[in-house]
Length: 551
Image 1 (tube, rainbow, N blue to C red):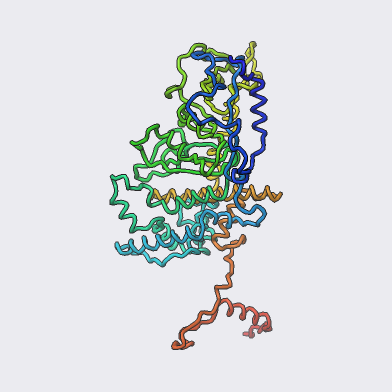
Image 2 (cartoon, rainbow, N blue to C red; image 1 turned 90 degrees about the vertical axis):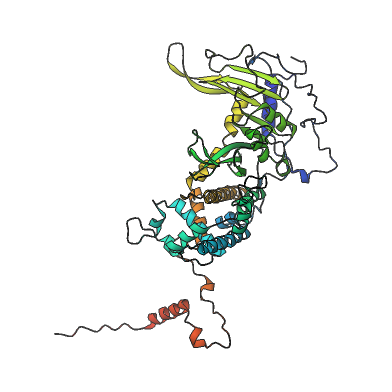
């Protein structure tokens, strides 16, 4: 070891101090005259290896007793202050937080394209009645989809059944069954005329597989990034949106709860589960230089939006030495489990772990800023990291048998990268968990409608996470997840919490008529005003009881 090396104790102290360091000010708020480079930054001036990163015992695995050199970390420099990017003291209702993602412009685009698609279907000979949809009605439609995630019935028709054991009252007060079904049949996110032009480009580089999703997909993605800036720890993982739609994008993953579906690559904040960025897998790319997993991570990590100094956690599908080194050059730390079959990963080195190795045994090799660590738990676990030292003295408790074959709880050493990985890798899983509690998904064989309903789930879940952050900032108790979704559904549907439709002042506003028209032919009595008048008169009428005449 070099005399300039850092002992494991010093490395652990450094790592703990770095974890406790407060977040720095955003890049824009710092003094422009100060030197932006620091001792935590990688030197990108050339490709020479920093003297601090010396290959330790090249060709041989080290143990937990060998001191490791702590990696030099990039300073955390986010583009904006981490947290919600809205007024933290303003009173936002659940509906207003949801509308940050489904803005009036986005909904109007959906309405226009839906009306065009319905007109096209009617021209083809469809027999159902269609009335042009507007933004208010589409918001009610979204509210009913969210309502159905709370009150789950076997089929859509059951929500409108009358005088039945499964009868519920709210949907019929919002819109009729046939109207809901025709909206579901005709809802369309892109311009049907442009769809035809895009379909003509099949087989060429100009063809966009996601064209039918593109307008809304991009708007929701931009909103996710605009209204929240994540903290330092982020997780990358895939998410399956369940469907068996017949498309070449449908995937099968045996280890996922939803084995058949569309695969999304998701970047989420590790602590809260906020969905920061996502991309939909559309099939193999023959022009990829480093492979799908490399491209998926690089497409999600955007320094122009995030800043630098973030720590990215990923599983063995993504982790490779090439990816971690390229992230390090871009001033991003990374940590993840890896497969030994990956290129440039150490193989068949002396002093490696064996099946007979004692539980808690550690082996590690450092190559430049990248450390490969193996740990024996119930089975061998392999991780690599550009953030952590190999071992800093951490321990975990495991239930084991002693020499007398009795079960005891024993503390065994655990590598620092594995401790951090277990703590921060669950961001996407947490996001999936929150989404599955109240998912707006309905069965459909149209793949872009399936993704559209998943975008509703992302919007409602991210809105709830924003609500929790805002409540914490104001020192208030946040609503529960269920109560928050209930309020969103009721406010979108225009129904109060008692289940009664809200009276609007515009419901009985007089409508002007032309001077040429006769008033008695076009004028009607306002139902609201008439009912109010009748109720008022009824209170002043004496009730006279007339006895029955004797027979």
